[in-house]
Length: 328
Image 1: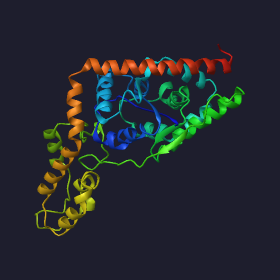
Image 2: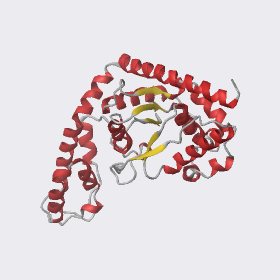
Image 3: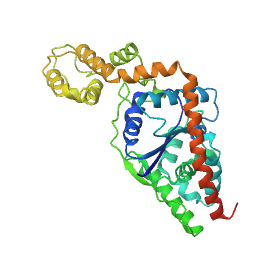
């Protein structure tokens, strides 16, 4: 059994795209690996440092989302990143020997800087440039052997592998394993307006939404703009509802597609069918989330339990790391 390490930033309300893109896969991985999952509040500060007013609320809500999705707090270690001080300590130590050029060439660094030009958000900070070192420290602190990544995220993991190799070479000791990627084919869901599902666009379907809220979101989905009447032949490939049908209604999707192209089913009926299917499939998650919202004490206990288990591993490994560096 290898050891998985992964985390998510508590940057706002969790949405269905987050679930289908990562969390659904985590739930499957917990049966095959020893898993450590953390709420990455320190990472959230690299881009949202100016407003932390909702940080604690977001952490609590994310814990509820994870538990309602099916992560088992006994099988997995689930904790808050900043509650284990060794994350920050190891990031500092690794930063001493990480070449600046390695950080400047990370694709997402330049992309995010470019995307935010003209906005009031300033990412020209030490923390944002160095976040890959913090990410490497997260992985290395627990000597993780595997990291779940999307196919477009391999560059991030390769930088961690380079930092591992450099550390082991500099200090003449194989302290860390080189973590391997566990690639997952994420189910990519667009936002209800066709753009990327994002809180900043206001086009998300919240994870754990009530049946009424989910149905309302489906009704707002963009459909084929060329289709005026129900009897007009549809073009499913340009319809957002169709993309959701392919994910949530696999059994009947082919039939609905054919009927749409033939002008035999209207957009209102298609949306109604999708909403019913989604609500049926997600009913268990919605019910569990509603129960957990009434038990804040239990959620707090889960995180504290995970903090203690993570701290035990981190403290033990940190002694070995500092010994290798002669900084004990």
